[in-house]
Length: 95
Length: 262
Figure 1: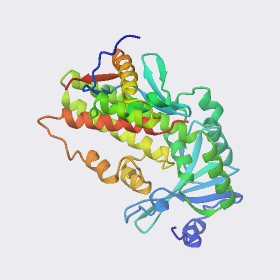
Figure 2: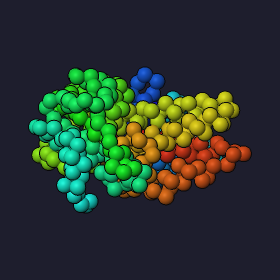
Figure 3: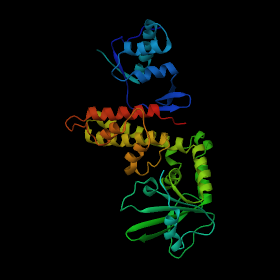
Figure 4: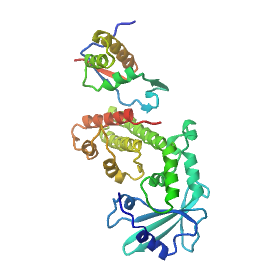
């Protein structure tokens, strides 16, 4: 596993211009010619990235929702955000 | 619930011999059906029957159906214009077939599945005032709710909103903030239409009624006041339009995240 490059105080924001659809199975993001189907936890993270919450805030929401340690949630959330940021699906603002 | 004085509505039609033998249903559509009409509003009536309407002075509107037309009659009572549109039962069958789940799952392009007048005709079943043929209307409303109509129109409106969002972003990048403003406004309209259609409040073919349609449903995440502030561009700064444009595009994205397409 690669260490995440986003930090707890970074503020992620969903990028505009990606096609998003709610289908029966959940949320799908159109990415180039592919469809990225989000799991429930991935959707929660994606929804939280509103340009106001920090990565640590998002991790706290995930930890509370799934009853996991905040440190573990922070590592998982940061890794996922890194992945989305690499595709431009989220943008990161440093604080 | 609006009281329907059926006899009063039918009298001008019957006096002019405009209700055919074998009429399956007659219903008021448009603003009068919803109580949104005013002194200058036309009254629109749909009549459904098995045989094509015949008279000496009917008008014709082309339709992508078989037969490829509907016939119309127009008359006045005082200053009030009435327009009667004669649909065939088979034409409604054809429109329902176009919005079946089979067609939706086959990936038929939402924007092209129905012509605007066809979409309006199906939409209007939902909130019409029934004058004759309650049974036919009830059965048609059931078919509409069981069809993929909602999914088709939601997908069409979201797709149109996405296209406008892309335009707005490109125009902002290029520094064309006036066009980006107009694209964002258009995106908002389509996205709000999708939000309303997702709750069964159809009629996006007539954007003038969007505020009325918005008030007719309740949206948990976007209040009427917040919607109206965006629609009337209350937070728009001509010297710095980017924040307003970004806010609008973000609302469009949030709507897309909430409205179910299937």
